Image (cartoon, rainbow, N blue to C red; front, side, top):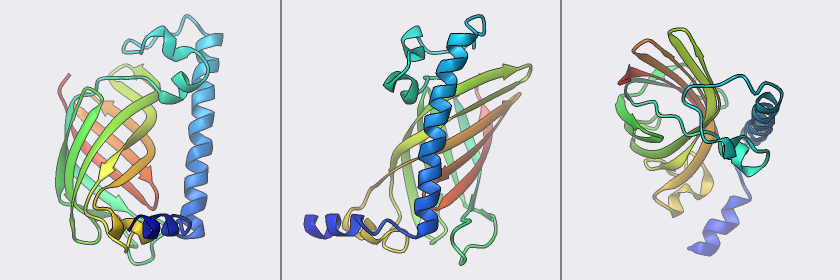
Length: 195
């Protein structure tokens, strides 16, 4: 079973998926470097919910991101698959989730009509308060169930898949809006905050 798993890792989806993954990695590196340069060139800029000063040093600490508490409940989830011709439009996925501290748990019916469960960590490279709007850029990394070989060739060999992706968010008063891109899908999520 392990040899089957490792032999399939080489076939990492379509070239569009590999290109999307490569752009995500490049974007993550640029955002981490931008965060460090902003902190060095503008020491007077302070985000009220920022991480300890050690997170502003260049290196893995900057890439790991800041811990920001955004407690909210996710009530609306939509999925878009720009690299999948069989899913041409933005679809409602029945589900909900809960975000507390930097942790997210959620469940939804995915595009393959399977119940999926998610447990993930969220960290942020950039966070800004703009009046009643809080916004940020970061990543979400975790584990997900409910997918098989139709998503990626080796998914049938393990029941829980790891994932990491780019997260853009804005909290407008009590409403939270998240956009998340990972592998071959984009989710748009809305909810209510508890701050």
